[in-house]
Every structure is written in structure tokens, then in C-alpha cells.
Amino acid sequence: MADIKCDICGNMYNNTINDICPLSKMKNHIAKAKKVTSKYYHNENIMNEIDAMIETCTHISKYKDVDGKLIRAIGNCIDDKKAGKWLFLRAGELIGAVHFKNGKEHGKTVSYIDGEIATTINYKNGLKDGKMKEYYKGLRIEELEYIKGSEVSRKSISEKEFMKNFPNLTEDDI
Image (cartoon, rainbow, N blue to C red; front, side):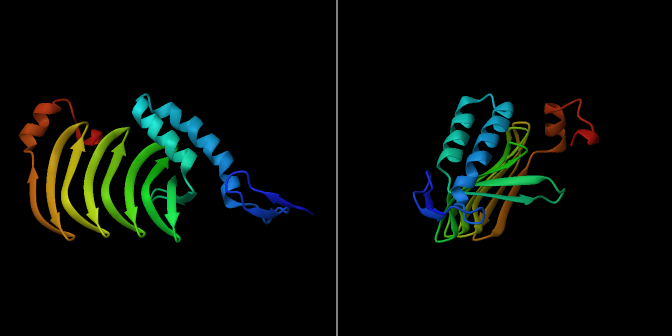
């Protein structure tokens, strides 16, 4: 059989089922990711960012979280190491955005719950370094400071302050 050229990466591959460019397999994943993701995000800036990442990524990997739910990681690699910004999605919902350098977290990391920021933290060479902020439904509930991976300070809002913002909250809601 004749070789075929991948229309994504431009490399030549044998025209067999076992020799298909991994990037060309992503076309189906890209279409599915765009369709599912659009259900969750009405914020145009987030949708545009996800669309751009999905269109330009070189890697899509899948794994399961501790609850057995499928996570898709979308981003780029340099020399087989994660590089730049990676997006993490569960059932099409953005749950994290992580920056990498040489395969290690490096830069700002943001986690999301139900489309809202849950935590922000800065990393340097894989270690927490700087402020980590935790949020609950938009309210900053805790701020921690890290230097080279070690916690050096912690500030939390009081239970009274928290309940003032969420008077109808029960333990089942948390």
C-alpha cells in the first residue's frame, strides 16, 4: 500500500490500521471536546481559550481520577515533556489549567469546580512557590504562602465570616 501524508503534522505514514499518525486520531477527539465543552461554558473568553488549545495542541491524553471518572489532558510537549499551558477536562468541563516547563509545573495553576475558580497557585520547577488562594463560590476562604515547596504562612476566614456569606449552607453542601 502507498504511504499517506497526515494532513495535521505533514509526516508520511504507511496506509495501515497500525500506522496512523497519533495527531490525526485527535480529529475525532477535538470535535467531541468542542461539542461537549460548549455545553458548560457560556463565558466567551473561556470558550475561545479552550477552542484555541484544542485546535493547536499536539497531545491529548486520557486517564481516570480517584473516582474513576475520565480526565482528558490537552496540551503540548517538547522532547516528550509537558510544556506550556495544559487544560484538564472531565466530561467536557474544564477542571484545571496548568503551566509546565520541562515536564514540571511552572507558573500559574488554576483549578475549577462547576466552572468557578477553586484554587490558584504558582509553581517553580515543580514546587509550590508563592501564594495559593482557595475559593468557595467566589469567596476567598484561605490564602497560603509557599517558598520552594514549604508552607510559610496561612490565613483563613473565620467560620462566622464564611457563614455570613452562605447563611443557608449545610454540611451536605460542602
